Image 1: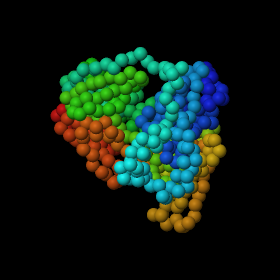
Image 2 (image 1 turned 90 degrees about the vertical axis):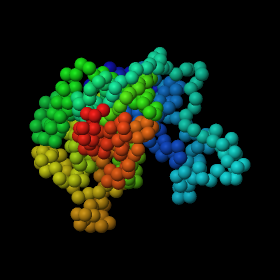
Image 3 (image 1 turned 60 degrees about the vertical axis):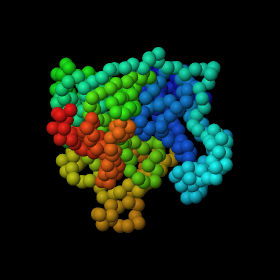
Image 4 (image 1 turned 60 degrees about the horizontal axis):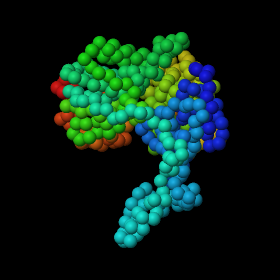
Length: 457
């Protein structure tokens, strides 16, 4: 971990932080987790996705509003502050809305201020301009941006979005002029950096966790085959942020915008963390596994000596636990599926505290950096109803079933189908687009579409 330090200003206070991290992590390590708020009720929001996909970390930086602080590197003298809650009445209004939330359901403002016509006009002309998040940039201190101009990358036979195992496997089977892009700088996917960190750890932790070792081997094999291709273009640190029907993508790399067109597209962008439905699932300090990987591996979040609660099962559960353990955290694990006897045996060998037969009931925050999680006995296990177990922790990682990423393909006209067992929608293949891996609701790193469909592109 680098020892170089820089000083930043947060709402009038000078904070010292590492020079090699993001604004969001720098604030976290200075006991600031509350970065923004929900516009309706003013509830605190903190780092959630750590990939610039949500709005939870938007802050005002050097007079520029709506800056993604989970992606912005710190620099000496930065001025950072939370954004306005809206108009002058925002704080008291939010308290009223929160207290009477039963009378102000989601979407009430779309239904109540539409008829009669004079009410709608009054709402649009007088009330709406008083709302919003953040102030416009100060004209005396213009925002700092790159000088890059939008660039057209031209047309490719196939564009593959996502360079995880599924995306790399698709690239191996795809001919013609191929472009592969990923928001990570190196191919391998969202878990690759975390698995590589474990492989480099002197404790040999992968020797005991076959599930993790086999995942890394699959990724390394895919990377090796991919690197042997000299007819494929790879763009790292690049995100597809919009689609233009029927064959165009808008890409973002830093502050640079680029466009590209394609004859066919393979969508292998993986999935997004979901934290489940329970009271307090938006509490700052609560993360999904993919956000954890970014914060620990990419940004160097310091968790040494911190109490960390990990809840869930499967690959991401054990990967999160192993990564946290090798990063110096103190673990407390709640396993929701005991169908992994080898991993449980390995965890016992490492003296990880394991809890089974529990269901997460709620999470609440207290103090600046602490969480309190309440669990009830799993109803299927015959536990005593009405009883409750409380655990206190500094950080909680919820490894629930992830949601397939589908926003850009949906903009391109791809149909969605509801999959109740996934808790969301998955992509339906179209003539010019195939979804593979987690983006199609499949298992991590496994192409969900038949190989023949990929080869036919």
